[in-house]
Length: 414
Image 1 (cartoon, rainbow, N blue to C red):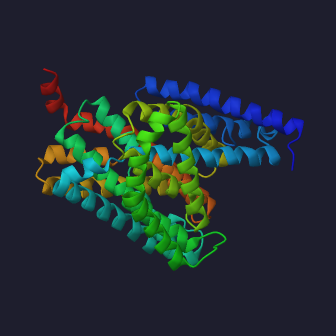
Image 2 (cartoon, rainbow, N blue to C red):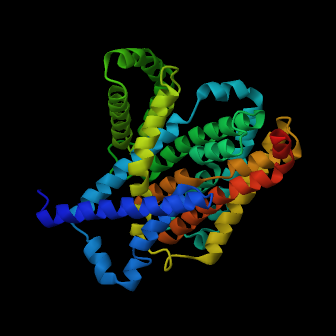
C-alpha cells in the first residue's frame, strides 16, 4: 500500500507539530525544575482529544485522522518506545550493583517485594474499584498492578541524584544499584505477565517464559562478553560515532524483534540489550551521551506527546482511583525501600531519602501502562491514573529528597 500525497503531508505536519510543542513545553517544564516528560505529555494533551478535540473537534480530526498516516505515526511511536527502553537499559551498570552487595540486596528486595505485594493485593481483592477489564485476566491484571507499583524509573532517579550532587555518594550508589535490580526483576515479571495474556501467541506460555529467562541469562552472560570483545574492533575499524550508533541500534532492533516473536513485548528485548551493551567497558560515556541525545531529542518527545493523543484525560479521569493508586505507590515504595535501606545500615533520615528517590516512576511506568493498555489488560481510566501517578512521583522525588537531606546537603556545600 502506498501513502497518498495528502497522507504524507499530514504525517509530516503531525511529526513537526508534535516535536515543536513537545520541545517548547519540555523546556518550560525544565525551567520550573520538573522532568521534561511533564511538558511533553502536556503537549499531547493539548493536541489530543482532551483539549483540541474538545474545543475544535474538526481541527483535531483533520490533524490526526484515522487511516494510513495514523498507522505510520503509530509505527514511529512503537520504534520510539523500543529506543527509550534501550537507553534505559544503558543506565544499568552491573558492576555498581555487585559493588553494593548486601546493602543493595536489602534495599532492592524490600523496595520491590513490599510495593509489589501492596500493588497486587488491593487490585486482587477490590478488582471492581481498580478497574480490571476482563475477569478471565484477573491474576494477570493484579500481577501487572503489583509490578507497576514496584518498578522504578532509572533515568529520572539518576537525574535527581546528579542535580542534588549526591550521585557518587554512598547513598546515591545504593539508590542507583537498587533501582537497577528493581527494573531487571520488574521487567522480567512483566514479560511473564505479557506471556500470560499474549496477543496472537505463536507458542505456549511455558515456552514463552522459558525463552524469556533463557534470553535474559544468555544476553547478560555470553552476549555481554561478546559485545565487550567486539566493541574495540567496532571503535577501531568503523567511523566513529556512526558505526557504533548503527550497530547498537541493529542489536536493539533484532533483540526487540525476537522478544516480540516469542510473545513478549519488543521493549523487553531492547532493555536487556541496553543492559548488556551499557555494561561494556569499551562503551565510552561520550558514546552513551550521543545515544541519549539522539533518542531523547527526537524519539522521546514523539512517544510522550503521542500518549496525550490516544485518550481523553478529562473524561477518563477518576479522582478516587487516581488518589488510591498514588497512595499505594507512595506507601509501598517508602515503607519497602526505607526499611530495606535502614536494614542495610543507613540512618532513618538517609533511609527515608533513599525511599523518596526510589519512589520516582516516570517514563518507565508510562511505557509499562501503555503496553498493558494496548493489550487490553487495563482500562483507559486506570491508564490515566497510572500516568498521573508516574508524573506525581517523578515531580515529588527531588524536592522530598532535598527536604529530608537539607542538613547533609548544606554541610557538603559549606
